[in-house]
Image (cartoon, rainbow, N blue to C red):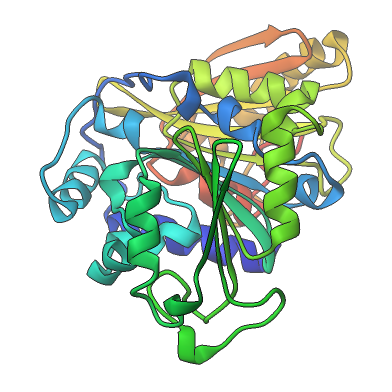
Length: 343
């Protein structure tokens, strides 16, 4: 888990730099224009396994941050995302070089402008990303061939899916390290219908494609992931982090999402329980927790910075909306185990 945590942090910081925690300018929380970019939609490509449930799932929607604005260059797009809010934009770790290294576009065949949303799941080395966007298979193939070791690229197309393979499974070569393979690790990709799966193993790509096709269960099929993702998508979360219990919590899945509403960062917490009665009981318990308790890391009282503006119960999911959280708070409070949802 700790290694994935580092990747998530690197991904966020490479896109936006180290901004302050002051008030952000925003786009009013505009929704993604296509359902295929939502958190729930991308979860439909994540196979439901013990490994994917154990590790946190991180999601970022660049569409929701951009709010309909476009850029005419990769540099301009990164500048746009940074201007909207420091510490807000998220890219899966496989894509983090896209924001800082011009060679990424040269070797991958696309840059951040093609990325509408991305999601990362699993633990290194058996982790993967699902990317929604406008990637082009021919451009990707031509670009990947220019990367170190690219002369060995294998491209195969079947049933509307284009697969890309570089390197041997379970091996890495520093001679092949590049902006798209930072340690020369194997690269396995599959592109279909504006959705790119990026992993290190053929087995994981196959599992993702089976989940997408509905021939194997995905996390989106699970009631807990469905309930939490639905709540965070309804909040137009541009960043979300989903996690399973670690310390005997009574909830089955937690979700932390951040959105911009009239330029102000808003935190939405969604906790899925075994039944509606447990979710209803958690509603008042969570309010009391924010009023009375403190961060397990800093010792600061939650109530000194956070205000619960709304709580509601949607089936088995308790949803709370909080003001006062700076951009990046959702990531920090979960990964530092501050105890925001331990009550």
